[in-house]
Image 1: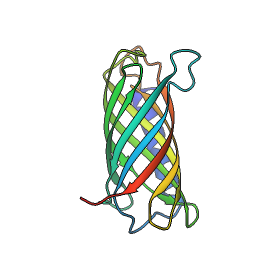
Image 2: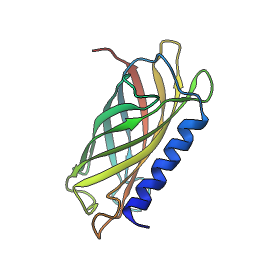
Image 3: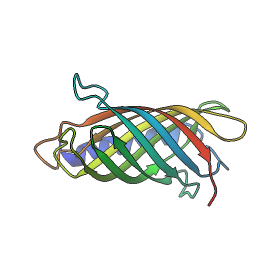
Length: 165
């Protein structure tokens, strides 16, 4: 599968999901903190990770911007910017697909490029005060822009704090 075909496939899944579920309205921006497992599916080289990101409440239709930083105990780091949308499964259960691009570096696994794309989803429980607690899963890949493209998956527990600048 070519890079453009992969990007198109991810974009189609994102758009189909966004069109078939109701979007959240009037939620504040969020400061997210997370801890979890970097390289979750590898037999070796497991590392812990810490995530910090900001999810804005500014939107174009139901698409909103996000940016953040991931750092792992093996010395890897990833800074990213991208998009997300919040989709209400119930009044309290929120599904959040997200896509980003960013820069990767470090001393752990070699992902083949300093440019990596992140695709993932979160499942949150939204409390009455608008804070959220949930799990997130994402995949990093350079999309085949280099020959080496092993990819990486992460599973994180996240807390989203309603935040205003």
